[in-house]
Image (cartoon, rainbow, N blue to C red; front, side, top):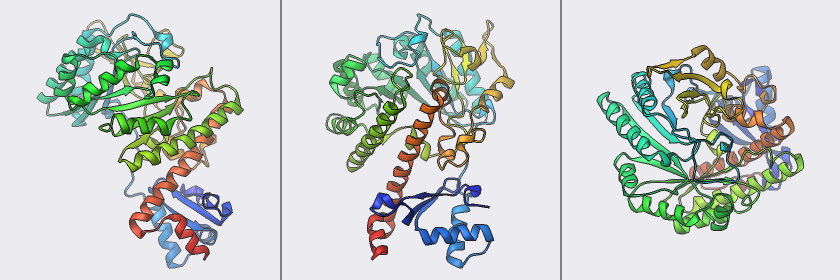
Length: 447
């Protein structure tokens, strides 16, 4: 047996501190949620203890800590009623033409019917609410959800009333481009404590190039904040702004100090990322830029996040557990990025529908098949990867779009960023517990 067999990973780390890579290792045990920095001698002793089942007291104690999974739980969805979040795509209509939009192919005038929305809210709150007393409904769009404001408002009010009758605490999210605002919208979001996440590129020239209407979106954000509505901002990272994440963070801190969380994720685009060297260079710049932005944000009590930081907070077997997602067609998709009949693989992603009698119909066999696709357990490339229990094999939609060589580059970028983020977390923990940095620890050890 080896450490990897126990899902304990040793990552050469000395080069992060001006030493030889194999002088020091980050030992990471994702299933226990524990990690430590160790010199090569300690790693040899731990490996020997695993192989021969014998160790001194100190090494035995380290192994026990690394193998202790009692405080950790693998996030998984076994049944449809396990979902605590319902995603509702209200329409396929949008007033923006974003340069990187993943759902542009599905554009149409189709809007979700009120009867299909009501039937799904009834089903979700009664069915899933019987198992979970905390539920969330997030309104998104294959377009812009606020363009269907009357339907959106009805959904919030009806779901809130139904949840109250059943003793369920219900939370609401809204993903919007932030271009449409009025007093009715502000009052409703405030009254029902809706958390908006606004798609916004932050820097005026980038916003106007990639999305448009910078001044209008900025006005919306300020109006929400003035009303006491907490917001988050999500920016999509392209070759035009990949080197500007630190500047974007500084802009947020200066002009929107009441917003504490920013999401910076790279776009998914086969047009942009099809050549390996170009893709590799982009992701290298992205990682460096993201880390700088994160360090700046931390100084001001803010949080910069992306798919990698989110994954390190969880333990999973699949990148996402699939989704309970109602589309404008009145169908249920396992992925909100595949919601229109005009999109490739639409039929493959649909596992249910609301019929003419407004009854929810679920193909449970198909749901279970879809849920079990693309797990880290089934992907041979994930076998020895130290982030397999965090990233779960990566996003199915991304993996399917890109050729293998591009997927491998993204995986390598994920590992590099995760390694650095884990070290920074361990460094913070060490400062809190011992009053010195990891660099000072290594210096003292070398001395």
